Image (cartoon, rainbow, N blue to C red; front, side, top):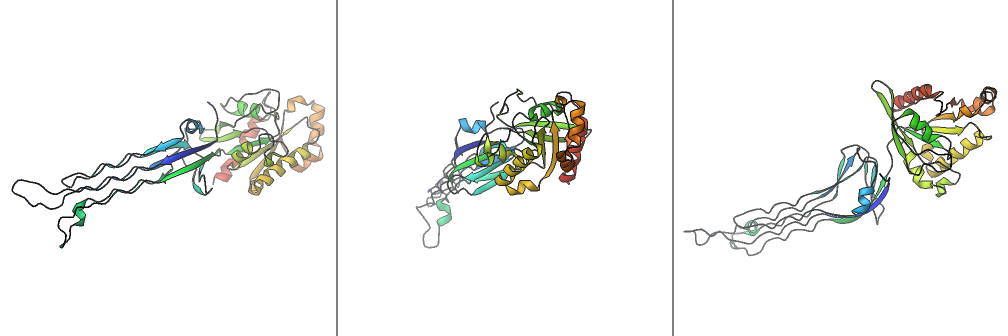
Length: 331
């Protein structure tokens, strides 16, 4: 399945049906009064959040959505049938904006959340409503009103408890594959991960949380370099940020500072999120190097955890620590 996190669509609600002009015609009632029925209302265009969906791919194939028009009114006070609504399902976490004004219409954070993005037109009233003491045979009725029409921009921001933040090839994909059922592509070159991956991590009975493995961050990402904004939009909603530092990096503190700077430059509020620091790929270090690393200024300042996605060293403790952070912030 291709991961698509933006889409532009055109929507149009149904028009209301016209009111009808007619008069009662029955045997022995030669001068029956007006009995024109009302037109039916036009259908609405409704967007619904669905947590079973993970991409906006379908909306890139079908870009136009229209609801059904209401039927016109009939004789004998018969009201026209209302038009059927059109329902568009999007992943939970989708933001809906008006394409031209840029105004946000809705933030679809909750599974099952619904919003009417284009209201159908109202059905017109039949001539039965316009009889007066001075005009008992009205020969006009109300037309239905037009349904609303708009162009919408949709943007998906993943909903995850923990977001993995780190340079390309730092071991994010290996980590999420080791602690969840997610199976991201893993290889020894930059930007192996080209799309976000979500994994469900089980930390025990009735204890689970989601982790997002997102394309690697590089310096200048907040300006769109590398995979830039494609990455950053997906860490905005995470509860906890897990910063991964390569054990073989000779400048771990500088690496961390770059990651923090990129997040803060894109959205300052992200620096207020709970964070964890993890040194990855410690299987590449000798025992002497591990001891020296633990005594380094970086380790003393940040008190990181140490893991290996390959040998699974440190993973049980990491999962338990992540759960504690998530559980506290869920309250």
